[in-house]
Image 1: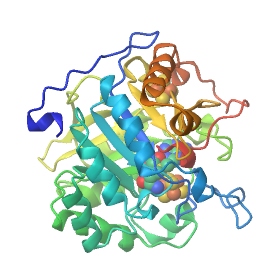
Image 2: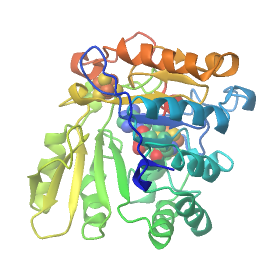
Image 3: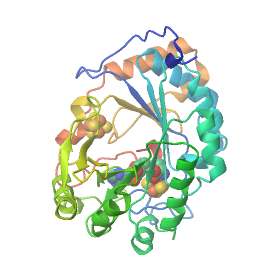
Image 4: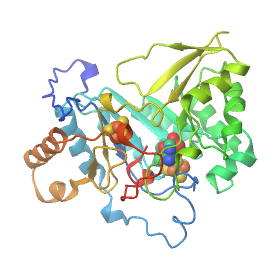
Length: 346
Ligand code: SAM
Ligand code: SF4
Ligand code: SF4
């Protein structure tokens, strides 16, 4: 039974060295994807010879659940499933159902490119207990979108996925658009116009220097301020309060009542001070920062030891954490190795 069902779950909350609690866990269920977004899995690196993980190296659903239970013991209430493309993982509905049964978990969401989100799948996800969906879409015209996804996926295939989710009963679908200068910044206003008045919240994400494959530098970043100014010239907007402390998107609403947008300011205004997220890779490593060089292996602990050892390890990992990468980043990509986004999820 989950906490929302009235159980008496009392977590033993823990904080890291900068006094940040552990609240969210992002779970990457696969490193594979049917897209090759140029800012995430560029074809030059993720080509036909690229060695994706063999099945035996992925955590099983049983192992993921053991980690979710341990995390819930320490105060995690939100789980986000991601990847790679999470809908490529067979029977993910079963995992969602099991997560929903963990004491203390009150919010389950999933981030997807939506091309595999048929109506049947959307109903199955909803029935399994998935509460929220974030869909990634980086342009509203096929030419630009293909230049981003690099596999000729059409805009319509994503819009169909969003529509299927809406029909299946997902209420606040958020649409994420990563903005990279020279790639899709001309799509900012057309995307805003498309989603204005639909009830779907469009969120712009500043292009980040995750991993070592995407050749990031600051000159490719369009700042949140520039994004807001561009929209402002066409459709007046005003800032609104965050829904809760630690919300990553800065919220704006259209003055004409056409709904709201969000801008995720990871580069121009970092939010490390409120960062309460841990990430579990598909192979069972915990990453305490999106920009970490290495993770803390839990798979061996899961496979060789008992839950007590797992709890102790997770506690040690979080209570010794002091990451605040975005607050210290420089204008060019840091040369030390960083984990790829497709490996630990966004
Ligand atoms: N495949 C799914 C999808 O695209 O929604 C889930 C995984 S994807 C890694 C999660 C999110 O990370 C997506 O919204 C994607 O656009 C974002 N992302 C990937 N690389 C990024 C980068 N370099 N900067 C900012 N966001 C990025
Ligand atoms: Fe795949 Fe998502 Fe990365 Fe695009 S952003 S390559 S859809 S994992
Ligand atoms: Fe959290 Fe690391 Fe991002 Fe800062 S840079 S908000 S610590 S994930």
